[in-house]
Image 1 (spheres, rainbow, N blue to C red):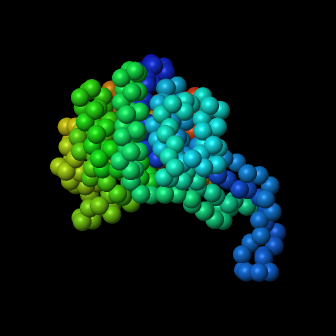
Image 2: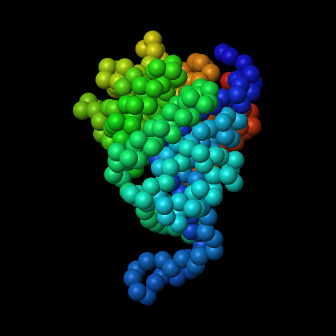
Amino acid sequence: MSDSSQFFEQFNDLNVLVVGDVMIDRYLTGNVDRISPEAPVPVVHLKDRNNRLGGAANVALNLKAMGATPYLCSVVGEDDNAKVFLNLLPKHQLSTRGIIQSKERVTTVKTRVIANAQHLLRVDQEDTHDLSAKEEEAYLSNIRDLLESKDINVILFQDYNKGVLSYSVIRAIILDAIKRDIPTAVDPKFKNFWAYKHVTLFKPNLKEIKAQLEQEVKPELETLRHASSTIKSKLGNSLTMITLSEKGLFVENSEGEARMVPTQPRLIADVCGAGDTVISIASLCLALGISPEETALLANLAGGQVCEKVGVVPVDKHQLQVEFELLKAGKFAKS
């Protein structure tokens, strides 16, 4: 195995182009001590309102937390929520350079109502139609300017099916990556699942796999190996990683060697954002050429770590390195 302390330091030298759907994760938190007389629903006494970066922006936060430099490219509206989003970026030392504003879209906001430590409700504001020809041209131009001006080590696609990553946009970016010999990593969604031909790392979750394949898929090595084989035959990707929620991860390398990585014991508070964290860590490992086996171990630990915290939060690099060393030494233990 490689020297983990060395590659944790090497993460600091990486530039990552993040493309995909961004959003605001808004949290309304308070207390409930009565039921509404108007309907059988709880009345929340609002105590706090909190806006956080979500979607591909949360991926950028995770990359930043690991020491890498993310270049975030997406499209938001020209509404009040866009102002909120654009104001959040510099507060987290993220550039607004790659963000395009459009009158044709609303900025995506996921509002979660939480009371007495329970998630009561989520309200979504969003557009899901594909970018217009004008928006697409501006978006791809922005991406190519960054590819020309920055030494990008890996391109990460974070797809939430909100319309930024249309089929034509996906194909154009992958072609640019191939021309420049830049590895690509994808966290797909249901729409355009099969558009990511010739990517390097493809990371769906089990639910997405079940929706796309006619064959039965269970969180078991043989059925996952069969599913991975089907994916590779259609996409021509080098690596497949499938997240399995509480069952951990499945990973298959370019030689067809596959394994499952189980989760470590954790006190789970909230699974929101775990997939963002997994693809962030996997992308950094891909850029450094770290083995798929170690990549899976590290990404799985990182995903589990953020599940211990309420809300969408980035990974803690120091904690991750400590846990990774303990895991390799066979001493990891959480209760």
